[in-house]
Image (cartoon, rainbow, N blue to C red; front, side, top):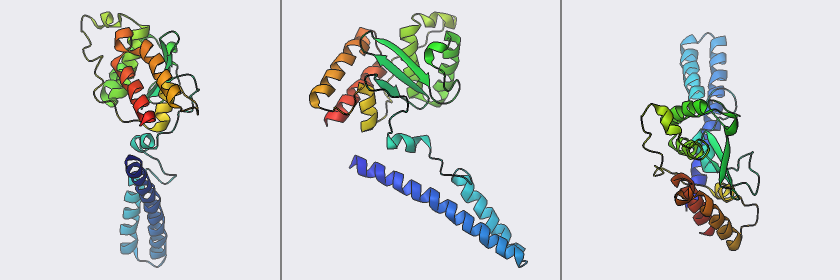
Length: 229
């Protein structure tokens, strides 16, 4: 049922986008024909309606899908490498290293897009943290997980102002099957044994009691449940 509803939303959205653009172009053609015959009073409303249709669908060019639709489609990241567990949000990807418990990552959208997290200074991270605080809670939580691991004691740089919501993972959104595969670092081997083994290995290193973070444990558990149910 979940997949049916998601597919229905995506399908309706695509039809709306392409349909609205087609209608807008049709109205422009009629407007031009009206202008050629001197019917300015008819052409102007048609052009205004066309402009609003283009504006509502992201412009004259190809369909621009919003982030929510892209997330529903649940595509794998272009950066994904089987064997490298990857957790993706709107702005950031985290790469987990099961053997060592280390965390790396890449900024995939917004400020510093294309930069690897290890290339950023603590000042850069704090700037991104302030941006994500306003724009996307999940990206903020993933960045916090990285900062707590790579920059222990970073809160001491805040002039005595303690950052209090580092473990708030309560708004973790649903994930797709493809995202679950990425989180556990799997390939096409989705046997129950492989799923449980990957989950166990990751929880040993990234559970909050092992120096991980609640957001990481929540995502790892969600990935296992998604693939086993």
